[in-house]
Amino acid sequence: MPSKARPLEIYALLPKTNCGKCGESNCMAFAIKLLEKTIALSACVELDETKYKEQKQKLAELIAPPIKAVVIGSGEKAVRIGGEEVMYRHELTYYNPVAIAIDVNDEMTEDELLRRARAIEEFQINRVGQNLRLNLIAVRNVSGEANKFAKAISFLVKNSKMPLILCSFDANVLEAGLAVAKGMQPLIYAATKDNWQQVGELALMYNCPLAIFAPHDLKLLRSISSSLMDMGVADIVLDPGTFPDEGLNDTINNFTMLRRAGVEQGDKKLGFPLIGVPAVVWVKDGVKPELNEMKESYLASMLLARYASLLIMHSIDSWALLPVLTLRQNIYTDPRKPVAVEPGLKKFGEPNEESPVLVTSNFALTYYTVASDIESAKINCHLLVLDTEGLSVQTSVAGKKFTPSKLTDLIKSTGIEGKVKHRKIVIPGYAARLKGDIEDSTGWEVMVGPIDSSGIPKFLEENWQKKA
Image (cartoon, rainbow, N blue to C red):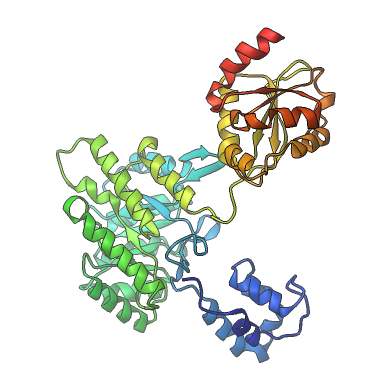
């Protein structure tokens, strides 16, 4: 469930001066915005006064999410994970997208490290106007030697700005790595039942977040978490182990139980972000790489859907990462706000006075699909993007967001009438039933285009060019 705090509880702790310095008309409005996560507590400058110190502390505790937000790295590329308030995004929304790390190891040569680091840093896939990227580099201590580990990390620090995860169960190895990554606040991976005290001290000494690894043992995970919290370690990430194949069912159950314990049961010792390691599929020898990539991709997707806040992967091939990045993008958009583009007139290629005029909705997925099909076919045209409040054509027609009057207003406001000599317009196939009404409202001749935008090139060839 969303935060149990109520507006009146928050209002009672505010200065109640209604000063308006926060940008809201009064303190009650500020309390409501604070609950909705649309304004920060720091916006109330009155609370900075000494006399409100205790109230500010109580407010911070009252609105704190049940899953603690943890920051990995420093500077502009720092990654924030966790911070969830709810089990399901339709209850509120998820704010901090799952971070994806790709691994390297300290047995790689400098050339290999540089190539892989560059590939991780420069990786991007553009989808519906957003650049989907990777977030961290996980450095594994394969050599077992502290100096090799430190050397690899030193090289990465000099040649990459990506946040790091330092992976070893040896406290001495981790300390060597932390010494050369000082000030970068990498994630230490990981504290176990054998080394938690030494590694906990390192987390405090270097002011770094710390992962706990207790494979398939939630009681042990909670026990280590409790001990580290008693030491003063505040930023913790939990890893209950990632088991593919026959252990997959237990893996998903463990992740779900941990998130439920934090959100629904309010267990502060388990109220931390979760880490999954789909890269474990590469442990088996003799398996074809493409099969491992496929398995890693679906394992990462399952963990992402079941509350992982951080994933460590090995494959960097686009085909293996695309499903994971796409799923992350879909889950971490606000379900209350459809993804939309700016409405208006768009130009493709070099349209002239005889070029076709097409219409679509401003739902991002619809717009970028249409735009891609137009650009791929190298069509010179004008595209009117109607404000349908981020809804697809079919949905907006049914919901009366795609209307003749709106299209008439768009035609007038964009000045398209002065850009073309003809008065013909192509509407999407799903808007076919509005043809007559649009003609009556706009005075333009309406041509009903294909339902699928992939059919636009053929449609224009058969209907526009021939008529022209």
